[in-house]
Image: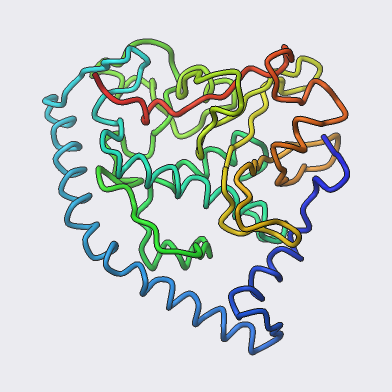
Length: 308
């Protein structure tokens, strides 16, 4: 899936990102490395109030949830009947917003970094989603910043209800078998660390609309392209970019990112596009419009569906 201007120059974007952080001055070599080190420390320091509060709030909450599951005392309700237990849903506006913001920050950053720095596990569209999902639920402390090298332009609060991998379901975050949630699902393989695009769509998200104008940051666009080896394909709606690239306004709010998956014998690549580009794609099958039967619609995570 290519159009003129769709492919972002990751190396240039990373360079421009560093330049913007230095007030427009270009730096190289040892100076750049030193400045990046300072940026890491400053960014972590800016988030210290959140990090200092998080262990107490999130740790206590997830600790109780895990203990309840182990003792068989957890709330087994699944008010939506979608297979996601209510104890996993993010039931405060603050947590929902924190998840959304971290999910799109993590996802978009993968499209901006040099390809050689892309985590090896991100090899298709579903892998990108799983990576961003896990890291959106992570505790964003200094160790996390050092490991991911993701430096948001502003301090963001983390999800407080629980944090990956110490969630009520451990690291097995994705529903892998159909059915309403039951307590035994924590032991029978109903949840897993892996989920392909089809499973993410069918068991972990719900349809919002086939109107892309209703997409919110963190929502997913799904396609079904029968002629492809892996027919289900997904894109992440970022909305307003944390890092507008050269030529973009700071108010750009229709950004999407995705991984192409393998293309022939090539491993594929990350891409970052604008919704307006997608709507005018040369191939009608990739246009996210209601008249395109290949476009399945806008989907939202089950954990953002409030318990009744």
